[in-house]
Length: 548
Ligand code: HEM
Image (cartoon, helix red, strand yellow):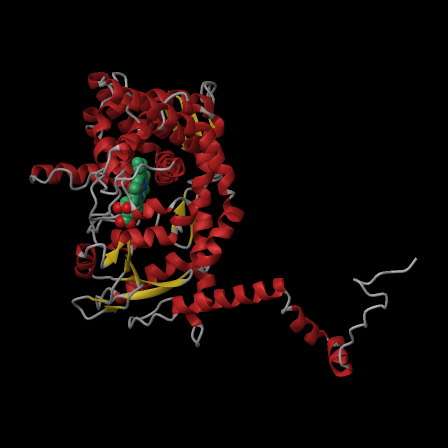
């Protein structure tokens, strides 16, 4: 049979490379260079160049303050970046001790950028006073977590959740506690087991139980019953919160154009959002329909739920809403808002309650007094917002535990959006990051005896003195200052802290009221896990519980 070569009967001429090039291609190095010219090779080379350029660009910001942690040499900061995970917190402590006597600001290399730390509270005051278009908290937070990709751009550009937390959540505090209590009791029973401590000392992995208890109690207020008990929904919001931190850190160092394609690969975003649509999407739709029905008939929705889903809907359905955007929001954005609120609440609160339980177990001498305070208050007044304010010993233990196990050794992060100069002459070019060395400040600013040692009731005693001097609340767990930066300080201090501290008190009052606790003799207080500037309670840490 005759073979047809695209209309011609003669075979095409064989393409031959010039002999010199052919012999060059035999050589390994040349082959690899040629390989780089293939589409994959080109993509890889361009990406590598862009990554190097991104790193170089981040470290090229010249800020004339001393550096801690960078190795000597032209790429010192760049190389030190890899040591940041194991040394970040140490560097900040070292810099603080070294530069506090001269009130200087210093910097450390973190992943993809230098961060500056003022040691003088005067400079921190100036930093706090600047508006967001000069030194921006939102820009730093959303960039660090790559919020536009890991969650949704609207979280960055329209942060109306702040308003919801400050108004709706705060108003709801006085009525939510019985529901929080109810959820806690069932969640504790389901998680730790209903017969914990009945037959003597029982070992419990505190973090494992607490992360679910906190997720359930928090979601009782966010999405209500029965969804707050749905295992698939809970696993989804817990897992996604962790992925936001991890993927955010990776996306933050990548060039912008790579972020969108890589987000799904890093965190399976579409899978998690699909699960959210399955669980929450229909609730949004049903409630919107009901709201429209009420609007059309001019009737009030009598048993309208009072939860986060409804607050978001009320806010976003308002034409021209208080954000001024006037947009009705897409379902994806509404879902992202629920995920963001879970991200902000669950791991922070679960870590804090786990740390407090570790500290109470490690200090059994505190337990009888705590037990008396809790049972007295509850028997006289029951569980309410007012009665919780009377648990001052418990409040003091929470504050002390947070002080020594602060969730992040730095807070009050800001990014300069325009060039800025402090009163001491320290100049920040556009794009500089600056933060408060929270843990170091907390350990040094207060003149308290043995600041490095856990002393559970120290704040309760100081509060009594302060109250007598007419300054109530100065040492309460929710009160922020440069001496207590666990929730940040100033206009961006954590808006959820009032709810968080109430929730912590309800959880701890339940646990301390019912159980004695002790650490394992062979283990002692479980040690913290430190990565960079993050401080986590040991997720494997075990405490023994015995029913009173
Ligand atoms: C014990 C639990 C918690 C801890 C330790 C904590 C800690 C923090 C910290 C350190 C900040 C940054 C402040 C700064 O650096 O100046 C922050 C911000 C924030 N927190 Fe919390 N938080 C907790 C619970 C919550 C809860 C329960 C919510 C929501 C209900 C929440 C919502 C937020 C939000 C929305 C921000 C950003 C504030 C802004 O953009 O101005 N947090 N939190």
